[in-house]
Length: 140
Ligand SMILES: CC(C)(COP(=O)(O)OP(=O)(O)OC[C@H]1O[C@@H](n2cnc3c(N)ncnc32)[C@H](O)[C@@H]1OP(=O)(O)O)[C@@H](O)C(=O)NCCC(=O)NCCS
Image (cartoon, rainbow, N blue to C red; front, side, top):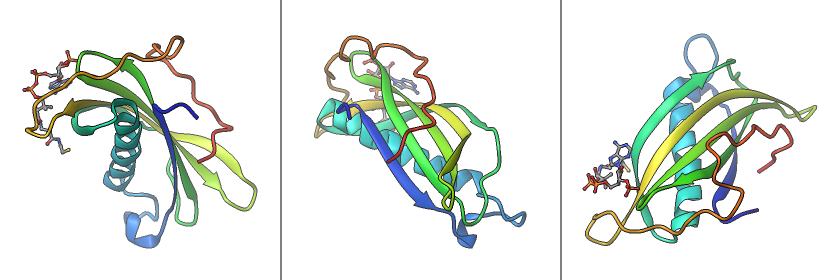
């Protein structure tokens, strides 16, 4: 797996849901932030902070008992900023069937020890696309 990518697997418990029994959006967002930050730290090799969460689309509900598979990938790099695409799949554990449930784009900024923005390396050739395709085969 490239150093600018991270995958994560979580289980949905009742404490993570709303009164409809589906995953609470804020809980899913925090998982996305976590997976995206790992991808950004791997790419930059240092500390990062979340600067922006953009265009998060909750497409299908995630239910209690599902697994949540996250796939985060750095798809763009500026001087100190990194754009990370995050795809969230709900997985029926018994069958392994995955369905794209939520997508979003996050911007992280690499910071030095004083919290000031610092340079990040460029992306390897071929990874500089803002439209990384969802990968239903992606497994953490
Ligand atoms: C993100 C942060 C470090 C930027 O610091 P700053 O002094 O404003 O930085 P600059 O204006 O020099 O911008 C630095 C880079 O960040 C990007 N950036 C800053 N704010 C941004 C935002 N809201 N959205 C997208 N990119 C942003 C700039 O475009 C620039 O990118 P580049 O270096 O690739 O060209 C600062 O605003 C911060 O610490 N914010 C709080 C972060 C935080 O607490 N997050 C939540 C918890 S982790």
